[in-house]
Image 1: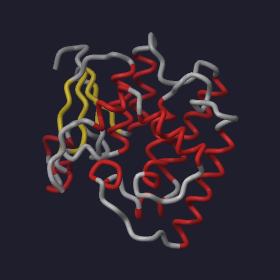
Image 2: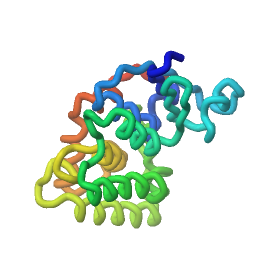
Image 3: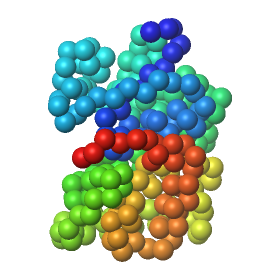
Length: 210
């Protein structure tokens, strides 16, 4: 690859919330990049040609020249370091730390929501069954944290938009787009976030049938 070229590897269905996060960050930064897909259904992420690039054998993986980096929050943090002109994280160190905390939490917790409301709800219109008690508990935890982070009718988490807004909106939309009850304030927040052109670029990608 050329020294400063960028290539993002995403899942072939464009349903990975983590690939979406990296994709949105690249567009928010107005960075030209090539988009390649990896068929997770056929376990192409374990092919030698891909594992040579992706240390964790997952998507997304970003190639910057000959440098390969996987794990979405690592990618977005790297992009802010490498291309600081248009940040996707807050400039205040405390708010930046909080944004990273939100990202880490959404990736490591709330598993019942992720299991029972997969992103196929969001990107394919698939409906899930009634939530289990474990998922209900996770939903209440999500709502409590989101409402604590959003002061008043703030359009974003930390003043100006940041990449954690996209991640949180996607988690909320797993519920909203399935028709599950969500507080109006959080529904309005997620709807505003979904209108961003960078997000709509991802939503509008052509997806293969399930």
